[in-house]
Image (cartoon, rainbow, N blue to C red; front, side, top):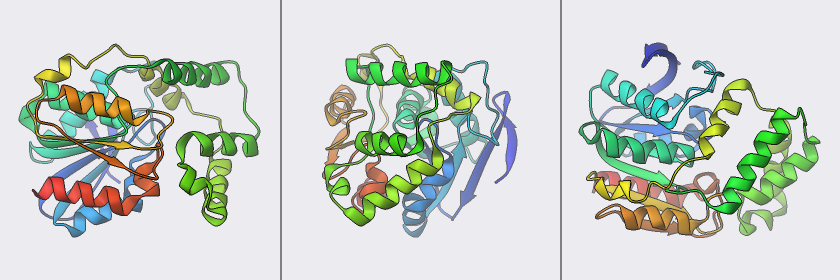
Length: 266
């Protein structure tokens, strides 16, 4: 993956395919390569050129441990789009969805269509409590036992349908146990972005065609928060994926890929 100087940092990204450009923005703590499990291949097969990036905070992109704002991440994606040709469809999930909707608002000249998965336009009490708790664990030097962390992560991020599958859930638990609860300095800086003001009124000024996707069993950012974003954006389309938690794009990739391809090719 090339690393280039953009928007005042060193930014790591990857591009594959031919056709109209789609830039994909991942959520908190995750590298851009997560998109390559399911969504990036489907979009390439549909005839798109697909760019994924490691957000600031995720090495080899600069960690920016001293802090960052959502505007910084928006500027990073804007600079990448400009460097790759000047206009793109943009897809984001969770924190990446917030980046996507803020980019659509601030730089509609760069965004052909926007897709936001598992998003929100405001904080709610549970999300805020989870975020504060996660930061407190890190700041107090507490590392959760790996098996316990894996179980909590599974309950928070996966749907009951996935949790009922004894083989599938074991695979997920292994992944979560391997990653562990410790976070690097850059991810710790990203966690600060979970505190934000209500942006729903601002999103009424978005003019870019938008698809908002909620995941029916999302406990981290419940689907009603995604629907609020769709309701705020004029003309936005809202879809909800069943049997999907916060990681619904990984749990139900075929359903999510169909929505992406249908919207971006329509």
